[in-house]
Length: 328
Image (cartoon, rainbow, N blue to C red; front, side, top):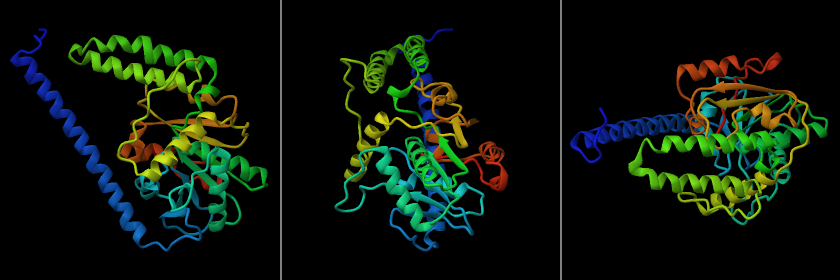
């Protein structure tokens, strides 16, 4: 039986849904806090690294170490839960972008950001092999760092990308067609299931589509401003610089081994197939799917996800390296 909007039964149903959503959000918050505290306890006992931009995340013995690049905000703290969850003998470091310390301005291009990261990496580990990983936009930095290290004759046996997308102008046309279908026409049908919030939902989706089209360099399309509330001034500068650099980045073809970790829950304005998006640039790409969403990667929870992490091994002498979930 259909519920009459505004009736007692409908209001009670809405209250139950809201309560369930609050409980779910609260549970996710506490999982993140617990994982973060575990990392803080571990990091307190670690000595400082040889470079201020190379932040120790997890202790280990021997080489190679694992170097993680954070997402678009540049915060290394988002990588803490992931680093503490990795059951590997090697040390794990996060690369702090330029722009957070006093007097520093952010790097403005992906190659410049990767070069800055490589200087920090070499201060800790002067020679290869180098194991690199990046979460979201950080995957572009990891990939570019692998390009530069390989050009310098250093060995990079593995690059791990966690839900990393190319800048939209570099997508093949069929990815754009898929996005506009899934994120536009098909998704409209779901809006009418909740007519009470229809106007707000339509405005939000219009803003998302306009932002997507503007990032794709569609003529005459201007994106609405991106909300950066909650970020420090330093993080805002790094965010804007990394976002703009990522959208204009054109990677060279990279023949090395690349592992792509894709969450099962995808955004509607995101290509379903990483292989299709990256086929021109990464012939050695391997895709593994993990439970959860893009943001869930920072929490790294649950037996099932850890099992996926163990089975997505790098191979060879690095078979013990779990598929680095990365990083948001």
